[in-house]
Length: 319
Image (cartoon, rainbow, N blue to C red; front, top):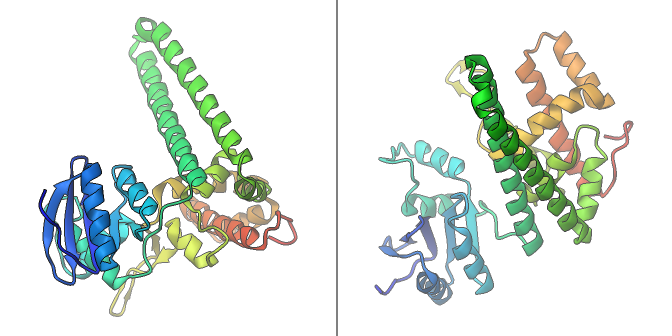
């Protein structure tokens, strides 16, 4: 294997088979296999030069490397692809492919040394795996239901009815089993259980939203409300240029969080007294439905963050 030289920051573009490495400040590039031996090489490199290792969130391909580096005592950060791409746009860089290259990842961490997140604790990693899998199976069921409707509309339902019913029942069982495992895992960790209890005390935040918030936003309660909104992609982003003032829009953030918060906001805007009053004011002001839901979702995450910070359950008079 090629000997890897050093850099204070090691940016890695992780794929299934390879680790493409860019070292800063020397700018050297290397490619090594994404194997146990490759992980050892990265760890040795980082230890020798006291470098920080960073890589983008790839949907799971980085986790083996991440766990190895954490166990080896190497500081390793997972950085959000959306933030790195925004950084690339600010530099006027146009990537030839959708993948973010290792050099750009390393340069991003130089620009934003506080960015990224370290590997969550074991229970959080397991919780994230379970909530992610549940979301995937729910999406499978959603697609199946769409297919069932299409079969009925086309008059071919009887050809597939027994298969469709069996598949849906099986998916229902799998979802219920995953939810049971999530509940069991939360019950095994006092801190996670307390956080879940606080979150679920808020009208609108149910079991799915609370477990997803804990899994995807472990910083909850340790950051400001504005930071929580930004991490969920619910902070308004200015789109101004010169004297022109564009509409504010939301962007970036952790997609899984934004989805469950929108669902929670729909419930909260009707059943949470404080947030219902807030939503009603926006509706009376003529705000579009999507703007109302987004505003409620943003207020919901700010409230949830404040409650977790104070370790206090929801009270209607003290959101």
